[in-house]
Length: 89
Image 1 (cartoon, one colour):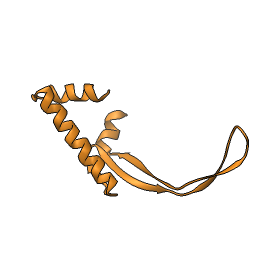
Image 2 (cartoon, helix red, strand yellow):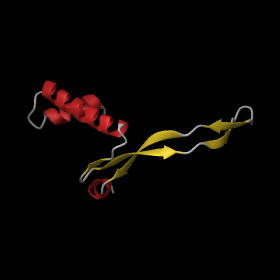
Image 3 (cartoon, helix red, strand yellow):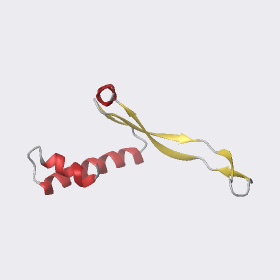
């Protein structure tokens, strides 16, 4: 499913496609803004988005076998809620 498919699914609930796109964009922007502020986003029954810090580590360049330093970075993690996990089984 892509963004267009998701807009169409929201529109099937009774909104126009234009309103559906605005609602989806607003929701995605709000989630993105919260994650940028290091806030956790919990959607009951769906799951939780959170930002975690991945520490710096040593790696190996597969082409040259040379050791390289991989810098620390922030990553977004998603943990499915119980209802979503059960529905996927």
